[in-house]
Length: 397
Image 1 (tube, rainbow, N blue to C red):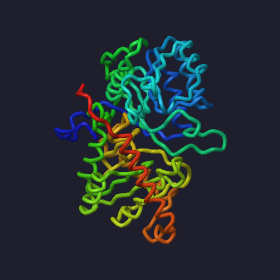
Image 2: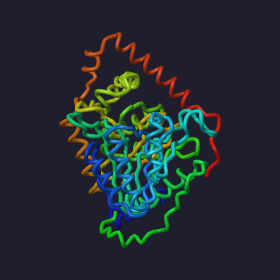
Image 3: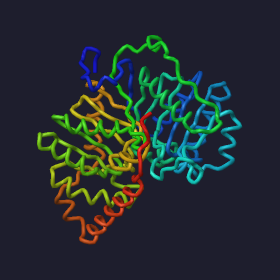
């Protein structure tokens, strides 16, 4: 969006002084991540769901240690369930190097434990002014290691006002741990003019945390389905929309909107994939164009609409992200930028995906497989109900 375009009243939480860039998973992402860490002069916040003690993890730790040796304040927050296998030696190495390290809500050690409420953020902020947000964890499978192709994923690099907001969020998440670790200092508003951002781009931070009464990403998807008039592309691992979103998709289709959904072909979670395939017939029956990504495992969480709006980040299109996990996305309203992303997703569809038709599904799926997909769907639905069932929501903060 140029500075001359109108932002509607309900969308005034967009900031305009931003410069954005789409970052692809694999070596492109991790090279940029190391570059951000090596270029930091004052403070780094890195928050991630999975941090693994492998070649990729050690590369990032080495960069963080270099930053700490330069007297940069480094705050590393990882999820206490997904990253629970980190060794004591690894943690000691971080802390002895001067890195502030903490695990979010470790299982059996947290005073405020909710089973499904996990830190699903994948965000880095350097010096309060430049950041990346996406779906990429710190692990070999998300990187190009040897001859193995990285999982397909994306992130958004942003410099400017939005990075300042992200820094505040990271500070709040770190400081909310209730432990004696060093507190992160909230950023003082920097001089945006000094960042030399010559072209405006409307970006807003979106968060989901049902326990804390935040449903912003859910609303972004809701509004996208409600307001689109031409084409929506949804790239989503673990695509299991709830009844409300299925209804909204049908309403959009009836308005003449073309909906394309890119899902994983090979998957890392076989039960979830079987459950997802149970919904294939519903999608195909309702004229949703369905494509399976074949080049590697699809892990991206990005959606675009009408060549003018998009959302990207950690949020999966299912009830676990909607009602349990702590999620972080960025919305972008900028026609020149979003149109390039939409074209890229259409190129992915053309070059790297197989289209699934209703005829294909019926001809290639045996009765036994259909029965298993239905059972898998019921099992996943039951598991999601258990994981996302909380007695109360906390008061707004």
